[in-house]
Structure formats: C-alpha cells, structure tokens
Amino acid sequence: MSNIKPFMDANFLLNSETAQHLYHDHAAQLPILDYHCHLSPQMIADDYRFKTITELWLGGDHYKWRAMRANGVPEKYITGDATDWEKFQKWAETVPYTFRNPLYHWTHLELRTAFGITEVLNPESAQRIYNTCNAKLAEECMTARGLMKFYHVQVVCTTDDPIDSLEHHRRIRESGFEIKVLPTWRPDKAMAVNNSQTYKEYLVQLGRVSGIEIHSYSKLLEALQIRHDFFASEGCKVADHGVSAFPWAACSYSEASTLFEKVINGNELNQQEINKLQTAILLELCRMNHAKGWVQQFHFGPMRNVNTRMFKLLGPDTGFDTIGDYTNGQALAHFLDALNIDNKLTKTILYNINPNENAVIAAMAANFQDGNIPGKIQFGSGWWFNDQIDGMEQQMNTLSLQGLLSRFVGMLTDSRSFVSYPRHEYFRRILCNLIGKDVEEGLIPACEMPRIEAMIEDICYYNAKRYFNF
Image (cartoon, rainbow, N blue to C red; front, side, top):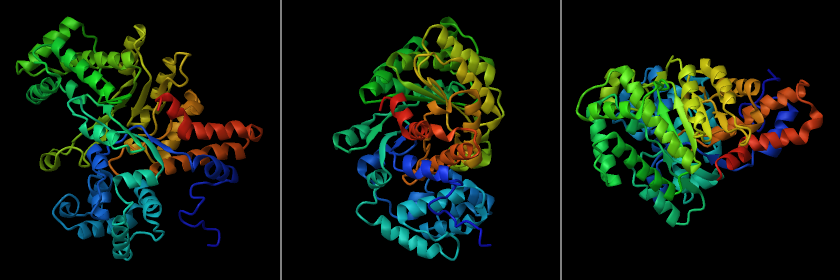
C-alpha cells in the first residue's frame, strides 16, 4: 500500500517528471481565456453573491443532476423544493458513487481551489464542508466577479441570442471591470423552423428589437444583419451555432423565400424542407461572420429533451439530452465547401458530441486549412460528454494524427458555474501528462524541450489569444 499515490496532490494526473515540469513551470500560471461559456451576464454585472454552496454548485448543473438521479435521489432534492442543505446532503451522498466519473475530480478540484478544502466530500464530511463553504462565500471577495479574478480569468465569452439587449455586457464594460466579458452571437432560434408557431413568436421578438416587420425571407436576413451589426458594436468577436444533425440540402434563394413564407403562414415543413431552409439561413449567417472576421463555432450532434415526461415537467437544459448517432461528415463537407468556394469561410471551430466522429471531424478540418491562418479550422476540445480524461485524450490524440496539435486553441468551460474554471486546470494537467509521456518514451525528442514548452503554453493560452484576437 506504500506505493499508492495521494489523492489529488500537487502532481495529480502528472505521471512523469517531464509532465510535472511542463505543468508547474509552463501551464499552471497562465491566464484563462474562456471563449465559450453560459455564465449569466447579469450576475457578473450585479457582482452577484451566492447565498449558499448549493446555489453556486447545484443550481443549473445538469451534470450533477444526472448523477443524482442515477443514484436514486428523488427530484425533490434535485430541482424541487427541498432546502439548500437537504440538496447538498443528497449530493454529498452521491459523490462517493461517482468514482471514475469526472464529477468526482471536478468536485474536489473546485473544493480545493475555491474553498481550500482538502477533505473528500461524503455523508460524514457533508455538514463540515457545507458550513465551511458558506462561511467562505460570505467573504467580500467571493462574488461572481471575485471568483473570476481569483481564477485569473482574462476573457469570458457568454452565449447570447440575437434578441438580447446586451445591457448587462454594457454595464460590465462601463463599470471598468478588468476582465473582458464579451457577447457571443448564438442565433439558433432564428433557424428553428421546425415549429411554425414558436418560430413566428420568435420572429415577432426579433422584428421588435431590429425595427423591422419580418414578413419575408429577405426581411429575416435584414433583421439578422441589423442585430449582427449591433452585436459587433458591443464587442462581439465570436459566433456559436448549435445544431443536432448538421444541416445540408442545397437551397436557392427563391426556394428559401417560398419555404419561409410557408412557415410564417402557419404550415409545418417536412424534414427535407426544414433541412433546406436551415441550410440557407445558416449559410447566410456564416457569410455575416466572415464579413466581420469573427470566429464561428459549431456544436453539433446532441439529441435534446429525449425524456418527454421530464421535459414537460422541467423544461430544457435539465439533464435529459444525450449523444446522437447522426452522420455529419457528408453534410459538413458540403456546407464548408459551399462557403469556401466563394471565399466566405471564416475561422471555424468544430465540436462533435459523438466521439465516434472524432477522426471524421479532425480529417475534415484539415481539408479547409488555407495556408494563411495557422489552425484556421479547429477540431474543438472534447465537448459535453467528452470533457473528461478519456474524451480529452481521444480528441488530442486524433487531432495529433490528422492535424497539428501545436496549433490547437485549447480548453473552454462550456459551463454555467463560476467555480468551473478548474476544468482548465484539469485539461492542462491531462495535456502535460500526454506530452510528458511522449517525451519520456522517446517519441518526442527531449532536446526539443524549448519547443515543447512553447507548445504547452500556446495550447493553454497563446493560440487562443491570437486566434480570437483577444
């Protein structure tokens, strides 16, 4: 038993001297550029203070909610009306059952970094940890902004709908807050033509904020352009597009106009018509992104809200989405090629949720590199169900085989939590261990150590800083 490593010590996940050197001397102290997350701009603007660790930790965290349900915890203690202590207690009861799930590591990284707690969380320690965390949260520095500063964050890009006023971003900027909090253009609802009624309701809102009555396809594009310009004026540099199966069906402007008219007249489109109109709209949005030199991100592959009963009870984003088994390669090739033919393909990051598509997406990215912008088309970090040791290693190994890992823009939180920043530490440790192992095994020459060190720093920070022009 004397050879057992201590849990989560300074060299956690760093299994060689080279890995330890790369992490401690080159990765650990670099700032964080969180270029995709779901933090609340209003909470940042208000410098929100969380009342309890339960509010901070369990509110909106569907990763934890899924684990609790799997552990037999009733919904009352997850999203229901139980007290904060009761919900925390049920999470503490669940934690010992999460061995080998990334939640176990994330939980204890967050406790150690934000609260200085090295004790493991379980039913016996729950009350002590709950009290300690709540006392810490009462300290002056433990607010939304304080946590961002504590984790050495430099830039945050939130996720924002075209109809958003961005008033909270403006309040943050005008307050002089030293961390950049930039909006991200996320126009998914402008493409949601699969339900005519909800789509028409959204168009009313979009028309109101853009000052246009949207009664035709041309007016839709005009309204989106107005909002796109507005987002740019508020500092936006990034677009994000979330889709299930990647849409591709060739569609002329005339066809798109006819299909749009059909939707707003209250008629439902069939699946082929939906694909056509969504393809047309998304291509136009991407041309707008290119015109402004924005980075565009595509998150694709999830099946959402598959549990109908719980969706009706709790709504979206409550832990009932899953990995889809769509085939995206051919559609993605056609879509990127359609933009590239007209030289309208901007810097693009591709995130797939199904790890079976890793090789397809990594190889696809290599087809559209342009020889002018290093890493112009990125195979994005392991996303959602893949942001753990195995998923991150698979993503980086596949990228290494099909492209240039050295040009990778690294990690993001994709989180709603102000204490999720240790995910960057987790990623950096995994990266350094991966590269350190290659050096130790003679796969990368140790005589190239200055280049190896620079590669680690680039992936952790500098590549993203240059790529997004932060």
